[in-house]
Length: 313
Image 1 (cartoon, one colour):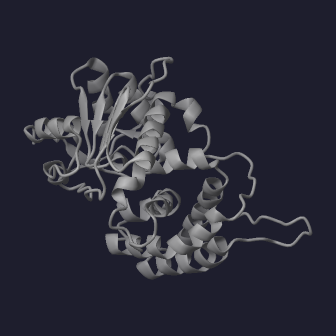
Image 2 (cartoon, one colour):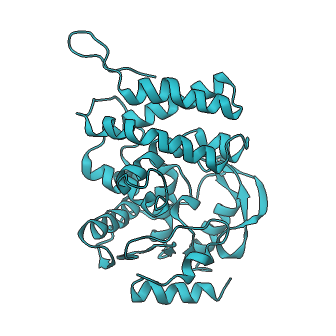
Image 3 (spheres, rainbow, N blue to C red):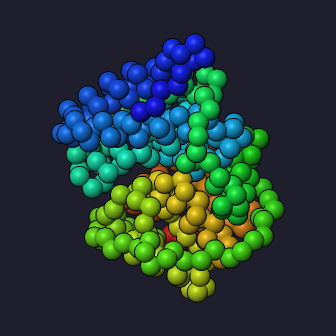
């Protein structure tokens, strides 16, 4: 992991890097059954993601974490602000830690919860300190590459900052029509009937940070492109991907083809967004209908679409 250096040559490694990434996180991963080598690789990835996140402008940061605000309603520590818990998701949960959870099965939900809780306080210290400049930032540039998705999430972020609920219109930018992923970006993975995917299809078993596109996601995108479907129902946006790059890319594609995305607490469409009145309902990835049945705090448009989608499940 990289260490910032002060002008006098002294290292200024943050407490997040020193205490959490170098010591606490590897210890927790090894205890769960990961090799020391793999634990160190994950720790370096998390440290790099933390540096990249801390270097982002405040307005960009606010939009980047917005997709994950609805899934942290019960993340510990509960008294931490929602923006911080969402930042922990971006930095820690959405790192290569996911591979030990989804693919290897070493980390259960309790392990993930313990790790993200332990990261919260030291990450806050890092994010609230003066930003350290870095070179190429892997989290930057999403607003340029995926303008429709960025405008949509920026409008949602503004709506959530201005009020506790409601709907807002926004101007969706024009641009070249996004294309389907190339053949070398595709991957075939195992399906699972335990979790329901979109449009009542089986979900797939894959790493949520894999940059490639599995058969279920490609099938969805082709349906939207052909006009065979107009609504994409999800428990949460992380069902598209935990990679911000891939998540914004897919959302940009969907919006460009006039699709509406319905999650447990969000309603996203070209030119308009809506959000449930707080507190949010916890998304249920195993049975997303549970969240759509809870109409408290939904705007009229959000409520009506949720009712229509429930009929399909």
